[in-house]
Image (tube, rainbow over all chains, first blue to last red; front, side, top):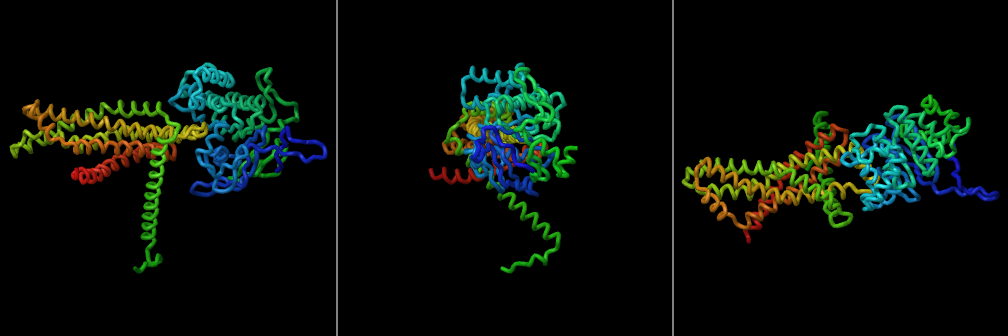
Length: 282
Length: 274
């Protein structure tokens, strides 16, 4: 296991100790269980201000639970979770709302509101804040343009395909320019072409806005694509990094039976001796 | 009192005691959770944000949507009351009191209880299944993640819409029940309609009307709070949604009848002093 890569902006003047930037998310010895054996045990990791952490692991290992703990949708039995520097593990629901609106989350199946149009789904937070309609429309069009779904503005989620729903969910998560994005298996159950489109959107958000994120996935190809490509805003699509290079701010976490067994870079994960990680990579 | 040592029980008896113990704890826990849930839902009304648009939308769904079933059930219940009572009353030479019997029974008891049970069947089930589906598709989590409290946005408007609408629906059910009784009295029993309405009117006292209007306030609260409570406790996917719906309808219907009994006792003793 290795320490997370230092984030850009950290001080590196000669003769001075490097000042670690405050992590956006910090888990310390977090455990949680639901009427049975622990789902997560003693999990500790951090997410730096421009870091993308890819959370790997087989199904049912606690990846989604970890993501929900990150923005306080669940509370741990033990340990401490800091979000934007604030301790949230014992915070009340009301106190959590202002922190949650600073994060964007993309749920596994999109979790769009069936009874609302795409416009109202994406603008949900803005509508609650009583933002004027013309401002909402402009921002929704901008968000839909980002996910390349301009034509779906007034459609209902029921008439969208699985991939389109995920893209609308991404637009909803990103409309308020969040300071942290949580992606819960955004490509799960999708065909390879749609998956690539979704990963390209994640990459676009990472490279264009430099938003820190945690991406849960069990698809290795998605994880490696994120590490070995960058989004070219001039070309409008992703391009591979030179051979042997990987994005330094995109690193890996891996869970096995509720325990964090790996925390490191692409180089570390492909050269690890951990038997479980090696089997997973094969 | 001597306690029997656990070792003296057979394995089957220990299993039975264990089951009773677990069930009792489960019931106590559910009552505790429901009380906290209901308290939070009521308190939300006194603190912003308040979702008036959702309140009005729910008034439309619960009130306007339930009007047809309430009118029909009220009308035919009044008719049945007139049919049944006319034959019994005529044995005592009191068939002219049919109006009095129907109006008192409808306004005091059957109007509030029947409306409550009918609205419970329609709305407690729809609330439990709607919120349950939102739970299993993570829409509730999405709402919380977007900074909106589902208790304020979904539960509180439903409860207060249901309380307000049930009051008006009960008045409608009472009115159509008396009309149903009049229809049977005039067209089937061939009695005087004017006499029916005058006995119905003369028999009514303010305590009867108060009794009939207090009950729906409690029934409305029970229907919406129980429906939302079971909906938001849904676990286990689509099968869980079905289970929550059944629990919501059964619990709210039984609670309406139990509350009716207790309220009748309390109101009778309170109103008799006036």
